[in-house]
Length: 357
Ligand code: ADP
Ligand code: MG
Image (cartoon, rainbow, N blue to C red; front, side, top):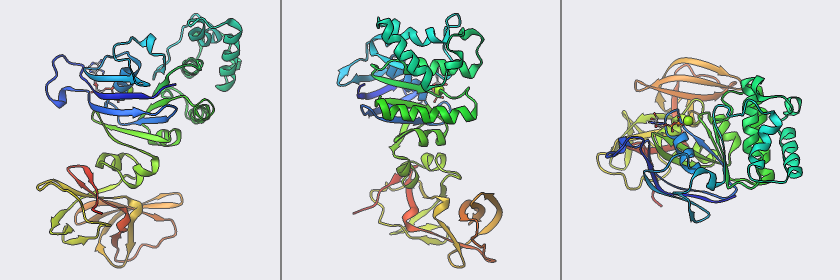
């Protein structure tokens, strides 16, 4: 197991990159703590696979260095990095049995056969492959094959890190849940450094203690699920995490006051260091919008029932806004809203502005 440092990494697939747009991965400068369970979360195409492949050595960065426990591995090939990687689609040896597929990474490293069998049996048990252990991989369904791939990633105890690249894509929803819980348990038990890539926020938030959110080739926030919810660093995080996502509304500054249309908005503290001319937006999660008889008048377009809560889709000053209410909350005849100041975040050019003091 190791701590992994990405030291000012950039990656471009095209030759001679010049502008930021030429880079699939813009500046990434970040450490993965030894034994941490991370989720790497972001939409398709944001650079998640690129980042994993740089760590495992399948790709060589255009700029920057990669260090494992302080040792520069940037120029080491994949085999020398001692990383287990599980890909989105199964990679198995069709002609081998399930058992031999699992044993392969161990035999390859010269482990004694008795020890190999012991580890393989543990993994078979762990991910429930007992029924097919002696079958050839060839005839297995896609999700069983993926379980074998997953098993191969988990079989070695001595790896620096295990990287999972959307490993449950081909697995059916029920088994998905089970496998994710088992991975989490495994992390608790063995304490491997794990990076789990997904575009699904539920998957990310249930697997990891730290979530790394990527957007357009950049890491936009690293935090606990709670931090991502309460204090999104970037409007994208606010929008991507939460269901429905954060409301983002254009505001203007009038001296010390923020104006949303002709309504003044209270902030928990004075904003610090906003550049003149920056595009200002206010972010407020639907959970922090209060509906009552005073405040800013809204027009309600639709009410969606989501179990113990309801989502009210309304319009404020001509802009859509979502409000989350508990199922028994009444909707007034002349609805007005206000924001809980502790749930209000201010953004300048999409990045969150801190407050003074
Ligand atoms: P993700 O895994 O988050 O979906 P990727 O890392 O696969 O994203 O891709 C990031 C960006 O790099 C995308 O714009 C993608 O089109 C581009 N890209 C990925 N692989 C290659 C490649 N082999 N050659 C050229 N461009 C690529
Ligand atoms: Mg990918």
